Image (tube, rainbow, N blue to C red):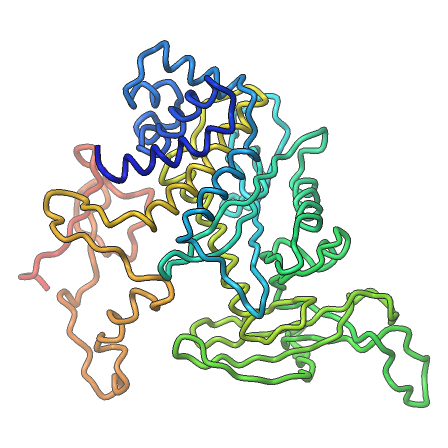
Length: 460
């Protein structure tokens, strides 16, 4: 038995020991089937995955019964997993001016054919809400040997009569408001607004804002001597915008700074002590700050809001630590193979995704702490990838490209291999038609494979 297998089994034994006797063994078999790739072969089916692992029919049924009817909860399993990671001492939490980032996100396991389930969540690809089992995912962010790794902290399921995405977000924000420690700060993406955090009572937060967001000063502007007196503070627009052909300029920032991040200079504009745009000035209102980061690596600036007095460098770094939470559902769905599921009981449709999210986090952490393993007989000297903090992988490649050199305008472009346009087979006669006039519905299919003819080099 290899070192990786022994370590993985030891981790699973430590996690499932909080479950009753008998149930712990069934959960161990199921989690091991997820981690060894059996669900990729079974395309999400439980019994074929268990049998692929090597269990007989009776053992597979006992494992399924422990999953379906066992007296266990995902909260206890996550607590055991956190205890194991912290006792090992390899994972170190990130800290910025004394605050630990806690990343919050929502994900859904899409079930369009699930009958009797009314829960839906917005799908960006379909641009509408689709039936699915949604969860709130909260992780602590740290690193192992310089590689940023999330540590699963809580999985919140949607329950009750209201199965909407709005209800799940409200429940998640309320949990974060009560569970956030004094040295922790919650990090949200653009799906959460400042008003949501204030209604839920989140004590500390960093939220990504829209490019057209606004705020107001918490004091009335000076009266100019004519017209009606203002009842609300001056409106603050962090970025300029265009409306009906008229350019509305951005408000003058309170703070302008510049700092260096990974070799590039980032310009920062800041506005402090703002309130929501619909409120009138009042000393009892909760205030926040808006920071705009102009990163030369991106075309659009990054707009963040926070109610904590921190430096722009720390706010920028804290928001970057929001992205590891995306790794948890990604590993559960794509790497483990549980984006497709075949369970239909009310409890099972929520328990299986919860175990998949936990298994995905275990797989991510173990891949960081275990020694590099060969992918085949040809891989004689396996190595791990560079840490995320070492910079983007494509930087040394594209920096050597002729087109991206400093004096690229003085160089002669490389000639194309075939200067003529690509030509494809179209029409019934099979004559070569220009590729520009070739559209997808008229592509000819031959021998059940898509084939496109290209002009030979001799005819170029």
